[in-house]
Length: 103
Image (cartoon, rainbow, N blue to C red; front, side):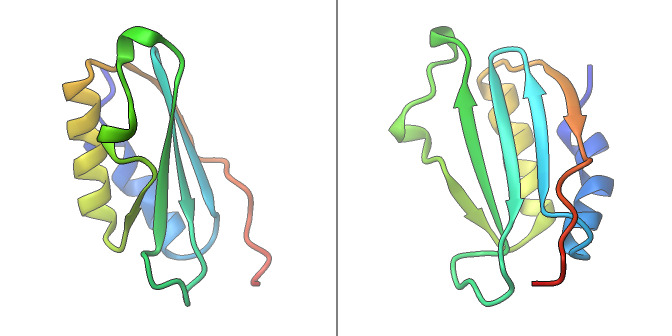
């Protein structure tokens, strides 16, 4: 089983360095998207969005998505906790992203 903390933290270093701006975590019952945000954004450097594939995942507005983060480790820790709480199995983490063009 892939855990978010083991697999995601090295990938997030690329987001933090602005070499890419998008990560897709494919789970069995949901897709999780992490996007970097422009440096001037005051809500956080990253936004996490969740798209539920199945009703049994039971993701609703009370789960508070999308969420904004300033810190990569805090973000990865919360995503890991969310996956455990919702019993999501991570199938893959796509770190290919879209390369930033410097804007």
